[in-house]
Length: 209
Image (cartoon, rainbow, N blue to C red):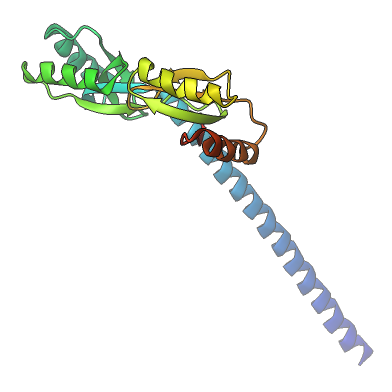
């Protein structure tokens, strides 16, 4: 009887040990899989960022065409330049697409004028918003206006209520915006924007630039 009981206990101990080893192995494989997956995602994101031509300034751009290869886009860019649009260059939109663009247009109305001129030579560029690469800065934007002269009124109103030191930059989709940065957290910026909106009557919004 004692011998049989010993055999049963030994068999159970071996079974439990095997199950534990299997569980540990499965856990290690799962962790490795997660690590590979996360590494793959971050690696893919980094590769994607390396493919794109960096945008340093907001504004508008005229896109004269897209192509799946850089060579094809370069040919299109050369053709557009030959037709009189010398400011067109080829940029990398992502890892699979290049495009022929004209940048440096400050106002949407100006872009519309270039678009109309291009149509006279049978080109059909699209006007698209251009947003600078994020640097992680939280900003309180006091206003956006089509011209610097118009933005001056926003700055003067803010100054009248004690909000000084506003900075100016190009706005996405054309025009200009004035803002204040230097916040330690988004919550701090939100409280600041609410108070500034209430005091000045301006629509102050928070953005991450």
